Length: 478
Ligand SMILES: Nc1ncnc2c1ncn2[C@@H]1O[C@H](COP(=O)(O)OP(=O)(O)O)[C@@H](O)[C@H]1O
Ligand SMILES: O=C(CO)[C@@H](O)[C@H](O)COP(=O)(O)O
Image (cartoon, rainbow, N blue to C red; front, side, top):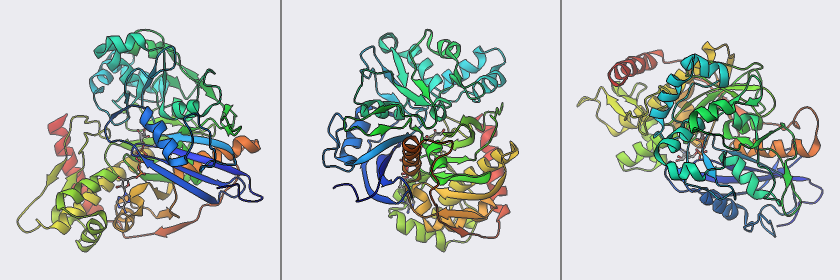
């Protein structure tokens, strides 16, 4: 594979929960000319070496990131987007100390509670300081868990990075240089302030009991290093921030992403501090802010429902579309992997309203889609309540490919839904950041995004029933 004649090529990487995806595109227009992907292992604690191996498999690069005839051949700049929050602990020689604890690992739920209690001001104090109220997903709680449960690992730790920081670092020709991150991913740690743009080493120390080195926060379009082949490295960012960049979000646009996580987010000019902790006050990758709600359960609710019914995803889709809205009164609270919004780390899924009359595969399939989307409709209400304007929803992530999702989403979300042309928008955003680092300037290059709009009459009664079942469960589980 050689350079496409006349084109300047940039690459975007999405090192996400289930896989690594790589695109190579024209820096001027964003047109994708090459793609690659490779799977990650399952589990919520993963050796970061798997992500680097997946990167090599997806691109054909050598262990030093040399593209030599592979997917990245001729690429002028690379950006890496990655799953947020994952704790990559390194020793003083930059060797990984233990498996990374991922965003969906709930073992640090107790640590989150402790940290809230230990800071004067509690939840409000954390929201004010970092934009976040600690829950198990955030890196700061994982540091506390290691300090408490694994003193030997804690003693070896010298620095803490996030997944995108680690892959970006491995891509550098000079791995002895200081690692970097960006404000988007730093804002998901719980020890960085989106209001001041500075780390809060006091909060890291509160969690870990001592200082740890942290990566330098690079500017949005900075070049942070070079690969062995001389390609520029952009700062990279968290996957949701990268998706926002890939879609070129405008005020009024809110993204609903249906990957392993479900997320709902929009851009804001000012930092957000939600003391209830429902909306995380993240920063974005452009210098703005990205208020976001995340659920632990999205696309894999559908894979679990398909496995339960013994069918593939395409049959699950047809079954769900053949059922009436409301699934005959079946409601699924989709907390299969525990849940983050609402904050129920130990919860399990709950199927309510089962009768002999409605016990059909079609209703069960439909309840899975409706339950997943009702959880995100709650998230949409929460970001709207914080003043984020919601004129239309952009639906992305693996499960946005589902016809049933496209049919049911506008009815439950209650706003027009646009489905952007199928693409890996996290990787697109990372590539756009790379093009920005290459070109310089105040704003990233403008790349077109086409989308189709899907509409449906709102079905409030399904959300009402879901709300009743959710509130009864919350009263039991809290
Ligand atoms: N047509 C479809 N219907 C439902 N789910 C789908 C469909 N296509 C892909 N998925 C799901 O999308 C998920 C992967 O989405 P992705 O956004 O890449 O996740 P992540 O970024 O978390 O790794 C997988 O769980 C996969 O089963
Ligand atoms: O925890 C969050 C956001 O706060 C997740 O959105 C992760 O960033 C993982 O994303 P996916 O791999 O599911 O896309």
